[in-house]
Structure formats: C-alpha cells, structure tokens
Length: 186
Image 1: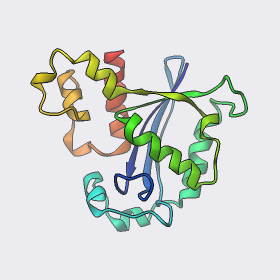
Image 2: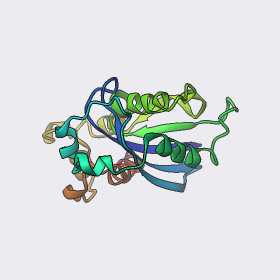
Image 3: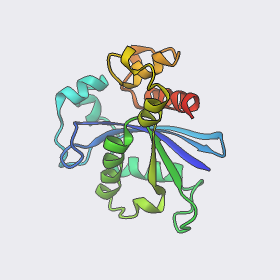
C-alpha cells in the first residue's frame, strides 16, 4: 500500500482564488517511509494572497516571493511521486492522507496540478482519501466533550503527542503530527 501523508500551506481559504505556497509530504510504501519532502513555491500568478493566511503560517510576502516558481515546485513534487507510482498504470496509485484534507487540502492540491497544466491528478492518487481528522473523531468520540476544539494540535495533545506550538502551520511539522495521529488511531 502506498500513502502520501501531506499538508499544504496556502494564501487563503478558497482553492478557486488562493494558491499554495508549501507542499510537504511523507511517502510511505508498505508501512515504510521512503521519502520526505518540503517544497516551497511562489503561488500561481493569479492567486489572491491573504496576509492573515501568511501570518498564520509565519511567512511574509517577501519570503513567499523568494520561493521557487510554481512550475519548478510542481516538477519537484512529480519527481518525488514518480519513483513510487506508475501514472499510466490504473492499478498503481497512492492514498492521500492528511488532516482535514477531505474538505480543504485535497481541493488545493487538485488546483495546484491544474495550474501546472496537469489534468491527470487521478493518475497519481486514488479517489478516496484518508482524513485523519475523521479517523481521530471516531477514536476520540468518548472524550470529545473534554476538547475545546478539534484542531490538529488539540487532537495530538489529547492522544499524548508532544506539540511544539511554534512549529504549527509549517507543512512538514504538521505532516509529522498528522502521521503520528494516524499511527495511533488506525
């Protein structure tokens, strides 16, 4: 089984008008981590940039402007996926695994592919997704009333995972937390 644990940092909340500035991931094949990446890109040229979104991620417009062009970041992502998936084999794909990815990150990742002229997102990934927030919700349903929210850090702490709050909203840190939660709740 192939999984891509991933997290994106974006320039806002709407995948139709905002863009991606960080793609972070851990590729796991048959339970073994085989790659980890942290790709930082300038969002596509039409992306609206919400300063509040950048503030949450601890970056500035100047920092994001210094990232590699989106096309180069896309090529880097594909170079990480390609050794593990044959995009022309309908039986060889990865499962996407993220925190709240079903309602957020997946749409941004699809848009990222489309902005780079790739109409074949489904050649890389299965259509179903593993949303760790949903999996954790079931796992913690009897303790949910003890939690002020169901954010990544809150869930991690409830499961006994140490959280460094200063590192939250950095894609690769969030991916590692997501994977730790996934390993506990599955």
